[in-house]
Amino acid sequence: MKTLYFECGMGAAGDMLTASLFELFDNKEEITAYLNSFGIEGVRFLPEPETKCGIRGTHMSVLIHGEEEGCGHHADCNVHHHGRGTPEIKETVDALNVSDKVKSDVLAIYDIIAAAESEVHGVPIDEIHFHEVGTLDAVADITAVCALIEKLSPDRIVASPVNTGSGTVKCAHGILPVPAPATAVILKGIPAYSNGINSELCTPTGAAILRHFADEFAPLPQMVIEKTGCGMGKKDFEPANCVRAFIGYRDETGEDIIELRCNIDDMTGEEIAFACDRCFDSGALDVYTVPIGMKKGRPGIMLCVMCKAENRQTLLNTLFTHTSTIGIRENSFRRYTLNRETEETETPFGIIRRKISRGYGVSKEKYEYDDLAAVALKSGKSISEIKKSI
Image (cartoon, rainbow, N blue to C red; front, side):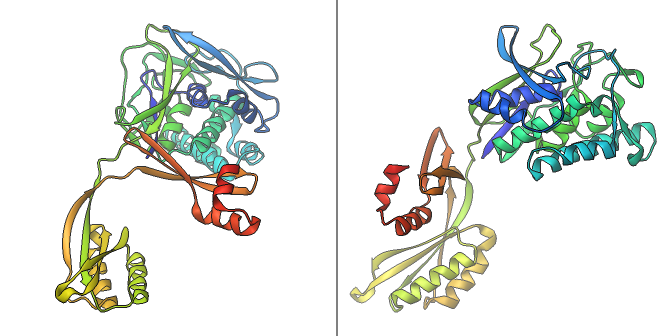
């Protein structure tokens, strides 16, 4: 299972989350160009290498017409913010040069923030006016996180408990306690703490991003880590001020499955093939046959069906209905599998799917046979020739 993990020991903010995800990609120039293609007028992402406490990472600046619009993370806000209302945010997001999925994620995150602001201020959601989180750099940060997560395509996202910081923060509404009231509302039900650092570590934007994407809040799960990224904050503290992102694969612990077996010596090959297909239709994980010798010297077939416990009864009925057997044996097994995913690969012959399997310290991949066969039929080449060409 492809897993993305955020370590939020120094809180979470849009720029830090963006930078941590940015670092997970090898093609930095291409990703920077992608971020700068969103179509937000006057906005430019500027990734800058930075080192804190001896740790190398990236600080992601968002420039609006060459200058930073917002006050950013971990900073008192002494600048004028050009906040936006919900209709303006939606209009901005609708115009973005990103997928519909990314737009949906961005608007969902703003819905989370709007609901929190509505609860804090006691006003209807449609009357909410976003201040700090409505600046163009905040829109850019949220969009960047959504877009980079879409590119990574993790199966599961896990985040650590969130360090909120402590003290006060200056914002458009005045001087507020940390965590800010809206942040505290967003973090309801999420494990959070403060280790005494006198600063705002988790912003409303960061909290809303985590609430929207994280499937679980827990310490780093057991996983085979492939890459790590450090997204650096603006301020310096005694601990390294960064959000770390980890991408890798979780080794599954296996699952209990059942094997159903029956011996057959009086069915044709076509009838057995038909029965196998019906077993797959009934939820079998795998179906296979083994040639065996039976009583009176008769050659026969042992039909084996692998299934989950919840499909046992259905498959028993299927076997009795579609085979001549009058008895079925059952065995229990533990099954271990690699995590599997399919990617589309652009080749000289067009797009061909590639199956990738990872886990237990190994990685395997192969092209989809059906795609190779289709290309072979169309091109007149052999499958081995096509494999060599791609």
